Each structure stands twice: as C-alpha cells, then as structure tokens.
Image (cartoon, rainbow, N blue to C red):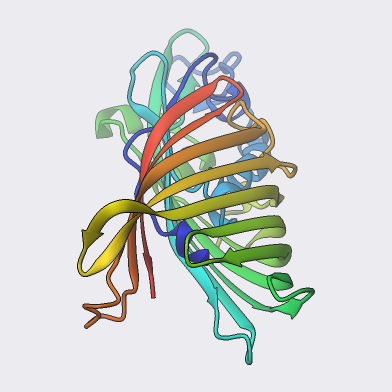
Length: 328
C-alpha cells in the first residue's frame, strides 16, 4: 500500500528559466582591494539559509511526484539540482492499526557564487550535498470497511555539507567568513510536524483500487554546530492526491501467479516555503507498469514487485522516471 514511495528515478529535466536567481549567485562586490577578492554582503548568505531549507523540504516530505528530481542547468546541461528518495509505510493490521512510515533522501545542489575585487570577478562553483531522514507514526481510524482516517506525527533530520570546487591558488586570494563556509561548511536541521490522510482501499478479486488524500506540514529549523551565517527555518507543506489501479492481464502468468498491469495518478501542490523555489508550485505524475506476485516463492517475505514508468509535468517542467517498489 504505502510502499509506493520506494523507487529509483533516472531522469527529470526542467525547461524554461534557470533555477531561481535568489539561490544561484551573489551580486558583484563594490570597491575593494585590487589584491583581495571577497563575496559581496555577508548578510546575503544568511538570507540563503531559508532557501536551502526550502529545498530540503522537498526531501523530508514522503511524496511520489517530488521524490526524484534532476533539474539541469540550461547552460551546461549538468544537473544543478538532484534529489532522490527511498521510503515507504504500512499499517500493521486492522486489529492493531498502528501505521509506520519512513524515508531517506539524498539531494545535491550546485550553486555558483561570484567573488570580486571591484575590478575583476571570479566564479566559485560549489556543491552542496544533503542527506535527510524522515520517520512517522500514525494510527488508522476506520470510517467504513474500506476508508480510514490516518493522523501521522513526523520527525525529520537533515544535514547539508558544502564543497567549494575551485583551485587552491584562487582560494588564497579570496577571503571572508562566507568563503570559509562555502569551502567546508555544514548545516544541521531538524523538522517536526505531521500529516493527515484519507486512505480508501477497494479490493476485489478482479481488481484493486487505492486512493489517498494527504496533507503534510513539517517545520524545519537549523540547530547544533550549524554556522551562524546560515541559521534559519522553513516550512514544508504539501497537499497530495494519489490513485492506483491494478488488475490481472488475461492469460499472462509468472511465478505461478497472474501478472497485473498498474495505472497510477499523482498530483502534488506545494504550499510552504518550497513554493516556486525551483520555478514550479505543483507536479503531476501519470504512470503505467507491471506487477509480479511473488507470494508463491517468498523466502524474503516480498509479496509483490512492481515497476512503473512515469511521466511528470508541471510549471515549465516535464520529464520521465522509472519507479521500483516492493510490498512485504
């Protein structure tokens, strides 16, 4: 059921304007020593903290449509933003309806900053790597035999590390606390929040239908040994609808069980600080794939394996991904 988050993505490309300029670069410095390069306005790096946390918000929310993104720089065609997420969730049983979910995500953001001595300017390519983990605990309250209301408490942790990818001879002429952070800085963040969900499962021998409505709100805040240059906070709020239809393919069997075809639909709207940070405020996914029933050969307690090819689109965004999932 909730195992639909377990997947791997291969490509997602962004068209149109480049990533929001507010996260991409600093303005050029004013007058400065001809021998010393500096980044302009130290406070501008502080202002970027909430933007970095907003990007982290895409990773801490369990969400099919934004769980795997690769957004290319229009000039270099190299990924400026890359995100991937692996996770899932399930309810123990109807007699003990404790719901547990979890997700781990990796993302990389490659901003370019500008250093200037008032006459010349130099580009400073950086790489910011982020690892996040989210855990959730909920409880199913049945409304009907097929519909449940599920409140969930979520807790998230994230860490971002910077890497200034520029030759040492150039660094020797660039000074300032901002450069120290760009070269080897870290940001630690935690998130508290939760979600509410309506989950309808319509199970028949001929077909299965699963529809979920979910609203998630997780508040992120820096803590610990985070540099004082990038202290900040952000909210990750997402509303999502997800639907899946599964039915056997007539005459097709594998592993002594019928092979099913799978149709999926998902739509997410971003309502928190991540809104428009990458140039879009919603994403839609349409998917089709195959599912194998492995219950007849079950040494690893895997009951189903599923592969789904998805087409995603939104504001100035389109692309494809391949999702892989397992049910236990």
